[in-house]
Image (tube, rainbow, N blue to C red; front, side, top):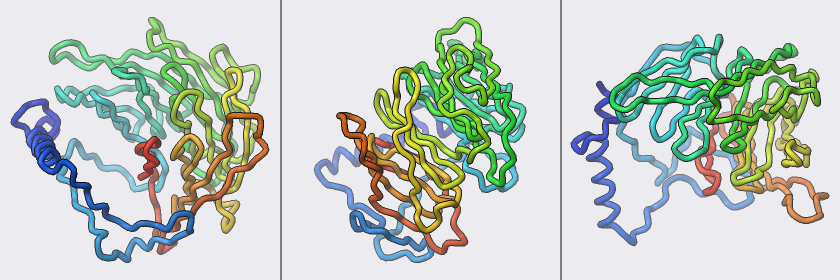
Length: 354
């Protein structure tokens, strides 16, 4: 009932009234710049932010919220992304690997099956008006499915477009397995599993699903439609990856050994540009996240995202590719033993990371 009340497209709903009030307020206050809250950091200077020490002006207004759903799960500090949202649907992963789908307007529900273990990452296609969802689980299964809602109040249906099953055994590691998937374009995704990274084509109009068994140790012998960017070789696992905004964006991969590797598109595959260690004080500690804040800058999260470092990347245009990434600024959170953050890139065009 709360979901229907919050999300229904009716003129007298609480959400609609809130939007109308905000629009009216915005119109009446045209020209008045909002006063920023929070703490401004000196440009280029490293800083420490103590989460228990608030100063005047940092109080944040709380948003009004209504619950969509709630289920009990075990507490675990994992950098998983188990929620995906687009214009029509809210999706979230369940403990056994199913994906719950909720239609924002009709409140219709569906359960997508196929994964046999927890989902580590879910992303909707960037295509406009596309309801194509990619999901990657710790079981090594990567699914791409199109979500379909018949006209009226019919049941939500799914159409499987692609299934990739990674068959390579992952080397034992004290770093939890964190599969990742990102969209390179409307028809191509890139994913990481263990220390392997691969790209695969997606046909959003496919009549029959494509099923691929992928040995990530095979390298150049990958199946048709798959490019192995970095084969599994028993090296340090990839913990996160990011794609730069815009066409032909670069690929950045953060690893459990504290290293970031940057790749550029090259003739259908990727060529490595650079590799660097973003945290000198803990060069071997596992990283937690990496995000492009613009085409030529990265925000990298250290262990548990207890520190965030911004790095500037050399341009990929022109003939000079000899320059190396340069450190811009590091923000460290305190007290050090109490920090676990989940970092999410909200708007790379605005250099905004949450």
